[in-house]
Length: 329
Ligand SMILES: [Fe+2]
Image (cartoon, protein in one colour):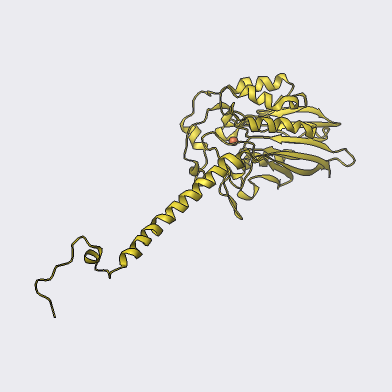
């Protein structure tokens, strides 16, 4: 029976406003905590992952070792140190020291497949990183980042398109000292293979090289080096920055035994048990890094030493150099 003149519930009281039974506010407060806990946990996990990717894995350098059966029977093995995509800025002391330590591997040849610079003052630090490696036979090509300074871009855009259009939209005079980089390496006796043929004595081998400038910015001119390899040479190496299939096909058709490229960064940010999300060029995902076949040739794609300073992280794809030991077929 209703009680006349009774005190009505306070309109601000939770029980009155929500119609929930007394004590329900305890559940509600707990729900608010749970509601905040999930995004906070995700935020914390994201921050921890980014910290790991940018501080730890980005500096966790690895050496990839592979044997490549391309030599004529009976010839002694030859060691090639393949470096790529240093994207060097003057402050990257760990990268500089690690590269310098690679001289202990005593390679017979050093191959640099470009994207060496990410700062106009990086040539001195890069030469310092090479150190005694400069006294060894070497060859090089340029990558787009040797010519154009880095600009911030959405790093996720690689998932749905390559960065090639970034360059075509902003095509202009290069603003990094790539010619000075080339001159410094040539002064040490290294061969400039940008749209050029070359030849070096490597160990006991007569090695013929064909190289092209970066296809990612349409500076590749394969026609300048086109033609069958010299059968008198012991081994024939094709050198390029981006492993673009149209060029790989031509190197293979001309008889090159081993093709060396970089550019992909191995995907840079990979998904565990899945791998790279994108290759940033025409090569297929399974060949985003490492040693593979390309028709009748071998293809080695380096995952690279660095990252652009505008995307300073790597995940499930540590920075690397490679030691390729050429052995008899
Ligand atoms: Fe690169």
